[in-house]
Image 1 (cartoon, rainbow, N blue to C red):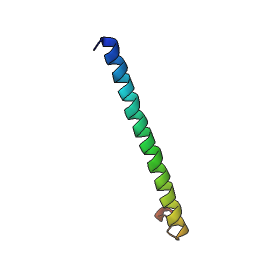
Image 2 (tube, rainbow, N blue to C red):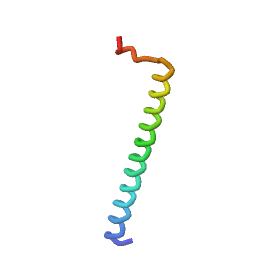
Image 3 (cartoon, rainbow, N blue to C red):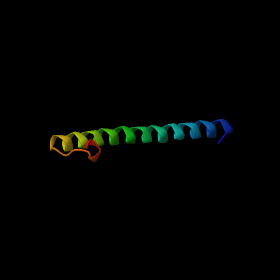
Length: 50
């Protein structure tokens, strides 16, 4: 493997990993927002809303 190939594969792998982390965070955020909406509709309130 040449140096250029090594650098390309390293950057490509890094891009894939970062993209996966971004997708995971986006999907988790959607899940948390849906859960909060469900809880608020059920009448559960935050303690800080004193």
